[in-house]
Length: 214
Image (tube, rainbow, N blue to C red; front, side, top):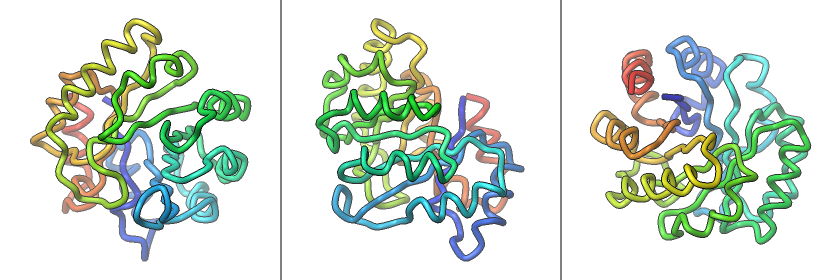
């Protein structure tokens, strides 16, 4: 299991320390929740913060653009040090073109859907993606409870991916903890985003080790 630690739940007064600590704990990726206050009801951070923390870790930077018009910001996040950029299907009417632009930058490309969006809309775009991200909560805020229908949704995406892109990584974001992670893994998730579950623990290594074992 790939573990992507969500920076949104870290202590922003000392990001360098937090990033190094979660890497030492064994996390594979650092999940970067980019929010614009328009596509989702919150504002987080942008390329400047990504660039600032890039020198302090070798973890894969998993940039999740929860923003309108994501294609306009691909260059900025690529230059800031992102290794993978995920856009929302709902935010880009030309998702195929944007995924291709991400790949032209030499990065991995991902596509995400909100809880109310069926995975069937991704059938035509999955062959062009390296990863598909299922939002298991409504995006915008950390520490939310996972929506119960997400397990079935991951399974549906896994079945679809097996037909059109067997190498696709399926990532789940929202409400990942010791009560939900194993069920997500059984449904077909290959990467789990965890924020408060990791950064809220006294010892980051314990939750990371558990998730990686799935």
